[in-house]
Image 1 (cartoon, rainbow, N blue to C red):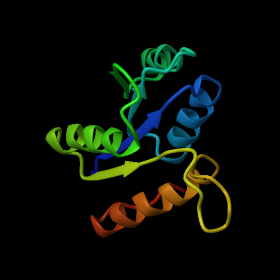
Image 2: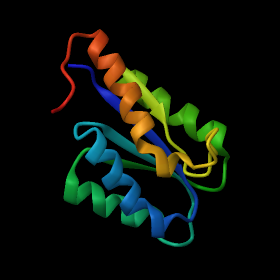
Image 3: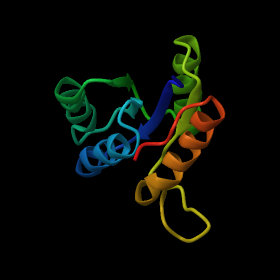
Image 4: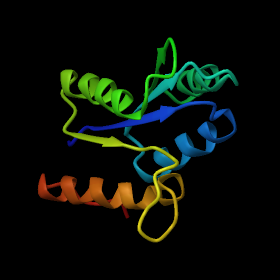
Length: 127
Protein backbone atom coordinates (compact mmCIF):
# COMPACT_ATOMS: atom_id res chain seq x y z
CA UNK A 1 0.00 0.00 0.00
CA UNK A 2 1.23 3.48 -0.85
CA UNK A 3 1.77 5.50 2.33
CA UNK A 4 0.63 9.14 2.17
CA UNK A 5 2.10 12.00 4.22
CA UNK A 6 0.46 15.44 4.24
CA UNK A 7 2.37 18.45 5.61
CA UNK A 8 0.13 21.35 6.65
CA UNK A 9 1.88 24.57 7.71
CA UNK A 10 -0.20 26.67 10.09
CA UNK A 11 -0.14 30.05 11.76
CA UNK A 12 -3.22 31.09 13.74
CA UNK A 13 -5.59 28.68 12.00
CA UNK A 14 -7.55 27.36 15.00
CA UNK A 15 -10.86 28.14 13.27
CA UNK A 16 -9.88 26.17 10.15
CA UNK A 17 -7.74 23.23 11.28
CA UNK A 18 -10.62 20.96 12.32
CA UNK A 19 -12.44 21.24 8.99
CA UNK A 20 -9.21 20.91 7.02
CA UNK A 21 -8.11 17.75 8.84
CA UNK A 22 -11.55 16.18 8.43
CA UNK A 23 -11.62 17.01 4.71
CA UNK A 24 -8.18 15.46 4.21
CA UNK A 25 -9.29 12.34 6.08
CA UNK A 26 -12.57 12.15 4.15
CA UNK A 27 -10.56 12.24 0.95
CA UNK A 28 -7.73 9.89 1.99
CA UNK A 29 -8.66 8.12 5.19
CA UNK A 30 -5.23 6.64 5.85
CA UNK A 31 -3.18 9.80 5.20
CA UNK A 32 -0.81 10.73 7.98
CA UNK A 33 -1.06 14.46 8.69
CA UNK A 34 1.69 16.63 10.13
CA UNK A 35 0.64 20.08 11.28
CA UNK A 36 3.71 22.33 11.30
CA UNK A 37 2.74 25.20 13.59
CA UNK A 38 4.76 28.42 13.65
CA UNK A 39 3.99 29.46 17.25
CA UNK A 40 0.32 30.25 16.71
CA UNK A 41 -1.11 32.42 19.44
CA UNK A 42 -4.70 31.22 18.98
CA UNK A 43 -4.35 27.59 20.10
CA UNK A 44 -3.96 26.01 16.66
CA UNK A 45 -1.33 23.51 17.84
CA UNK A 46 -3.41 22.50 20.87
CA UNK A 47 -6.48 21.97 18.67
CA UNK A 48 -4.45 19.90 16.20
CA UNK A 49 -3.04 17.75 19.01
CA UNK A 50 -6.57 17.17 20.31
CA UNK A 51 -7.61 16.09 16.82
CA UNK A 52 -4.63 13.72 16.74
CA UNK A 53 -5.70 12.18 20.04
CA UNK A 54 -9.25 11.80 18.73
CA UNK A 55 -8.57 10.57 15.19
CA UNK A 56 -5.01 9.19 15.29
CA UNK A 57 -2.44 9.69 12.56
CA UNK A 58 -2.07 13.41 13.18
CA UNK A 59 1.05 14.96 14.65
CA UNK A 60 2.05 18.50 15.47
CA UNK A 61 5.50 19.96 15.01
CA UNK A 62 5.58 23.05 17.23
CA UNK A 63 8.11 25.63 16.10
CA UNK A 64 9.31 28.37 18.46
CA UNK A 65 8.47 31.30 16.16
CA UNK A 66 7.28 32.16 12.67
CA UNK A 67 9.88 30.49 10.49
CA UNK A 68 8.16 30.56 7.12
CA UNK A 69 6.28 28.38 4.72
CA UNK A 70 9.29 26.98 2.85
CA UNK A 71 11.05 25.79 5.98
CA UNK A 72 7.77 24.28 7.25
CA UNK A 73 7.52 22.17 4.12
CA UNK A 74 11.19 21.19 4.27
CA UNK A 75 10.87 20.14 7.92
CA UNK A 76 7.63 18.27 7.34
CA UNK A 77 8.73 16.46 4.20
CA UNK A 78 12.07 15.52 5.78
CA UNK A 79 10.16 13.69 8.51
CA UNK A 80 7.94 11.98 5.93
CA UNK A 81 10.98 10.88 3.93
CA UNK A 82 12.77 9.61 7.04
CA UNK A 83 9.71 7.54 7.94
CA UNK A 84 9.42 5.99 4.48
CA UNK A 85 6.24 7.61 3.18
CA UNK A 86 5.77 7.06 -0.55
CA UNK A 87 3.78 10.21 -1.30
CA UNK A 88 4.44 13.53 0.42
CA UNK A 89 2.02 16.36 -0.15
CA UNK A 90 2.16 19.91 1.09
CA UNK A 91 -1.14 21.59 1.79
CA UNK A 92 -1.38 25.25 2.72
CA UNK A 93 -4.75 26.90 2.80
CA UNK A 94 -3.74 30.25 1.34
CA UNK A 95 -2.20 28.88 -1.85
CA UNK A 96 -4.38 30.09 -4.69
CA UNK A 97 -5.13 27.58 -7.39
CA UNK A 98 -5.59 28.56 -11.05
CA UNK A 99 -9.38 28.68 -10.67
CA UNK A 100 -9.13 31.15 -7.76
CA UNK A 101 -9.96 28.68 -5.01
CA UNK A 102 -7.58 27.83 -2.20
CA UNK A 103 -5.99 24.46 -1.53
CA UNK A 104 -8.11 24.16 1.61
CA UNK A 105 -11.20 24.34 -0.61
CA UNK A 106 -9.74 21.88 -3.11
CA UNK A 107 -8.75 18.79 -1.16
CA UNK A 108 -10.19 16.76 -4.04
CA UNK A 109 -7.19 17.79 -6.18
CA UNK A 110 -4.91 16.29 -3.57
CA UNK A 111 -7.03 13.14 -3.48
CA UNK A 112 -6.89 12.82 -7.24
CA UNK A 113 -3.09 13.07 -7.20
CA UNK A 114 -2.81 10.47 -4.44
CA UNK A 115 -5.02 7.99 -6.25
CA UNK A 116 -3.08 8.48 -9.45
CA UNK A 117 0.06 7.37 -7.61
CA UNK A 118 -1.76 4.51 -5.89
CA UNK A 119 -3.17 3.31 -9.22
CA UNK A 120 0.36 3.22 -10.63
CA UNK A 121 1.29 1.07 -7.62
CA UNK A 122 -1.58 -1.31 -8.38
CA UNK A 123 -4.18 -0.14 -5.84
CA UNK A 124 -7.86 0.32 -6.65
CA UNK A 125 -9.56 3.65 -5.93
CA UNK A 126 -12.27 3.67 -3.27
CA UNK A 127 -15.81 2.97 -4.46
